[in-house]
Image 1 (cartoon, rainbow, N blue to C red):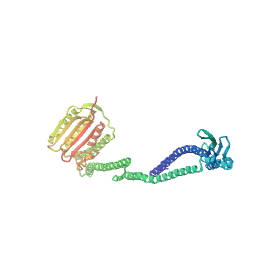
Image 2 (tube, one colour; image 1 turned 60 degrees about the horizontal axis):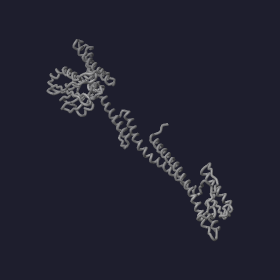
Image 3 (cartoon, rainbow, N blue to C red; image 1 turned 90 degrees about the vertical axis):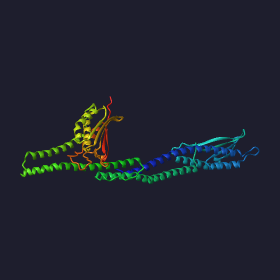
Image 4 (cartoon, rainbow, N blue to C red; image 1 turned 180 degrees about the vertical axis):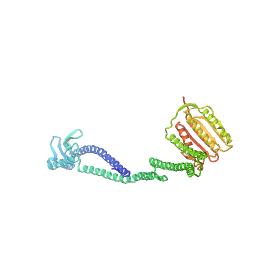
Length: 464
C-alpha cells in the first residue's frame, strides 16, 4: 500500500516523538524510582532515629520513664506504619503497639503489603523488626524495637506521589505526540509541497512542455539541488527540441531542392518536353550525389555520436601534421589573399593521427571559409601544464554571442541563410568535439561578431 510523503513524514515524526517520550519516561521512571527507594530507606532510618531520640528524652533519672508521652509517640508512629515496642533497662515492657491495638497493627501491615504488591507484582517483602538501644551517655536505659514492612515500604502518600508522577509522564507523552502531529504537519507540508511541484513540473516536461520551470524557494540543499536539476533538464530538453526542429527543417530543406529538381527533370523527360541527353542526365546525377552526400554526413555523425569511436593510437609529432595540412591549404589561402601563419615547435602526442588530422582540417576549413580577402589565420602550437595546446585564430566574420553556446551541436549553423553549397550540413564541429573528447582532451571557442574566432584544442601530453 503506497503512502504519500507528507503522511509518511507525519507518521515518522509521531513515531519518533512517541519512542523518545516512551524511552525518557521509562528511564526517568527507573532512575527516579531508584532514587525514591533510596530516599525512602534513608528517610525510614532517619525516622527511626528521631523516634528513639524522642523516647530517650522521656526518661528522667529521678522519676524514670514518662509512659504517657511514650504511648503518644508509639500511637503517632503506628499511624505512620511503624509498630513500636519500648522496654526499660531491665527488659520490662513500657509500651507495646500490638498490646495497644493488635488489629490496627495487622491492618497496617496488610495494607502496606497490598500497596507494595500492587506496585511490584511478585514483591518479596516481609515484616521486619530492628532493635535500637536507648542510651544516655554510656548508660543503657532501655531499647526500642521498630517493626515495619521491609526492606522498605510506600505509604499512601508515597503511592499517590508515584501515581501523580506517572500521570505527568503520560500527559507529557500525549502533549508531545499531539505537538509532533501539529508541527510535523507543517514541516511535512514544507518538505512535500516543493517535491509535489517538482513532480507536477516533471509530468508537464514529460508531456513535452519544456518551457515550464520549478518556481520553489527552499532552504533545504537537497530540494534546491532537485529543483535546479529539473530546471536544467527542462532547459536542456527545450534546447534539444529546438535543435531537433532545426535539424528537421535543415534536412527537409536540403532534400527538398535536389528532389524537386529531380522530379521536374524526370517529369519533363517523361512527358517528352526535354530530351534525356547527357547534360540533363548529368544534372540529375549531381542532385543524386548531393542527396547521397547528405545521407553520408548523417551516417558519419551517427558513427561519431555513439561514444564508441575507435582510436588507433600512436606517438607522433603533431607539429609535422599541422605543417603538412597547411601545405595542402596553401593554394586556397593564396587565392583568397589570406595571410596564413604558423608558430610552434615539436610536440609529441599520443593519439589517432588520422582523426586528429581531421580535427585540424575541420578548424582550418572553417577559418578559411569565414575569413574574407586580406584577412589573417594563425596557428599556434605550444605546451601547457594541462597538455599540448593548439590555437587556430582567424579575423573572419565571428560568431554572435547567442549562437556561441550551440556551435558544437549537430546540424547547428549560426548563419541560417547558409545552405550546403556555402556552409555545409553543420556537423563538422560536432565531429571535431567528439574526436577531441575521445582522446581525453577539450575544445573551447572565443569569438566576437565581426572581429574573428579563436578555437583552442587541448590534447593530453605524451608521457613515457
